[in-house]
Amino acid sequence: MRRAIALARRGGLAVRPNPLVGAVVVKGRRVIGEGYHRRFGGDHAEIEALRKAGAGGRGATLYVNLEPCSSYGKTPPCVEEIVRRGMARVVIGCLDPNPLNHARAASYLRSRKIEVKVGVEEESSLRLNRDFFTWTEENRPYGVLKLAFSLDGKIATSAGRSRWISSTSSRRLVHRLRSRSDAVVVGLRTVIADDPALTVRYGFKHPGPWRVVLDSRAEIPASARLLNDTARGRTIVAVASGAPRSRVEKLKKKGVGCLVLPARRGRVSLRSLFRRLAARGMIRVMIEGGGETAASALSEGLVDEVHFFIAPLIIGGRNAPTAVGGEGIDSLKRGWRVEEMKVRRPGGDIYVTGSVARGK
Image (cartoon, rainbow, N blue to C red; front, side):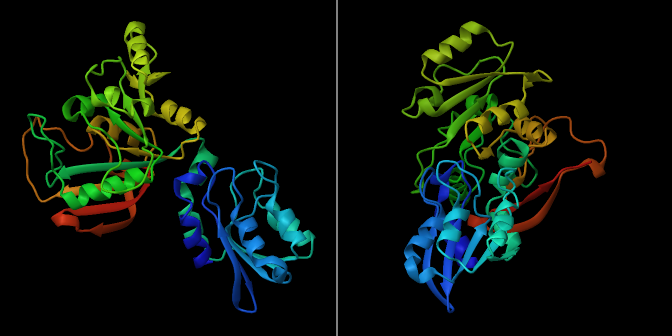
């Protein structure tokens, strides 16, 4: 199963919006076929592994990290091919949350006299596709909040300067995170202060995540890099329903996408934005700030994972922006607790990662 999980990771973004799946066929303690889902619309991992196993796979065991599909989609159901190929046993990492498939494969296979075992390396299997499961079960992308700040919690000086708070090693890790994301979300203030490109560099291969700007009044400067570079066709400006129509039309003429969304406390509703991005097949979204955007994402329950880069630096200043703004919480019990926390030290920074448990 660990081999199946390792194979599954190779699919990367090419399988979107499908999950990452790997499969291994074993007979007599020998691997005779393996495969993984390589691209959306292509063969599923089980089919590739069974094909490689050939006729020798009859009576063998199939290991797959996610429950095989049992409904027709871009390809026929994998369970039918598993039966046709004469598998004696199927070992499944975790069940599929999709109502079309959930628990149906195990039932179908058992009805065809195939032994089925569910829950081997289940935690690892669930973690591998937790972004897909969030998209499927909650109708929104999996939210990753990335912030770089000083020891005293500042993301810029009182003059608005933020380059560079984190080290080169940390910034390289940020580009790795972007390379795994379908979209990157920033607030208007970040665009005005930093004029970011939000592309993937440092040698990571990626067509470029969609770049999404939260801009309630459509006030993004016409000179902003996001509106003028060669990737502007992958830029979306999210505006509130009350934004001046003339400004929205100017943005459209620039060749960028515009999403008109409901407002929440005078700002673009992030939850509405996430639903619209999910409908476009975006499964994993990275939120890069600033402080008000981070606060909104947390308060709307859209942050599943955090990546904090803390520089060994003290900035100070009551007017310097903080990592997480907003109104804050009135009780420590309502705070967002970071679980499964891990700490690293890239380039002298403190790099903290973990999953987020929402406050109550």
